[in-house]
Image (spheres, helix red, strand yellow):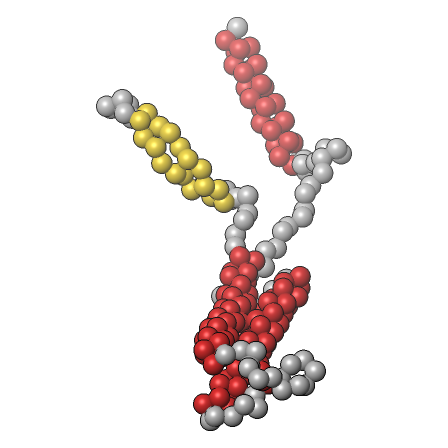
Length: 203
């Protein structure tokens, strides 16, 4: 009886080893319905010089930095703002020169400035704008001219800043594998609550 038990046990062990060896030799085959996802997303490398290039291009030629960032819809806005500022500067400068020339003529004792004539070219006994009015006109148009110049320079500077910031944001990491979320946890020692932010990376 013990011999039979020993023989049966030995036979069972040999059979198990044989079956295991056969399984190892078999090639593992994938099920027919299994689809392997072989799509690999290749991210563009971060270019630290891109914002500087965009700002430099916009400084050389307004709107060129926006074209570098492929934000073509911003180019008409840039040129529209600059054209408006230049238009108002030119208009106020022209009016300022008119009032200044007439004022200089009055100081010289002349009555031949344009405000001594009506719209048809007839000379008037009293000017349409007094000398005090000419002084106020010069101050008004000089102030508007300076404001127009500052606005134009400001739009030019904003054009450069926009190109630089836009180039930064175009390379900003908005991957779903990077997330920032608040967390709430109870301290088991003193039973107090802890609040904070958790930065998660998924690989």
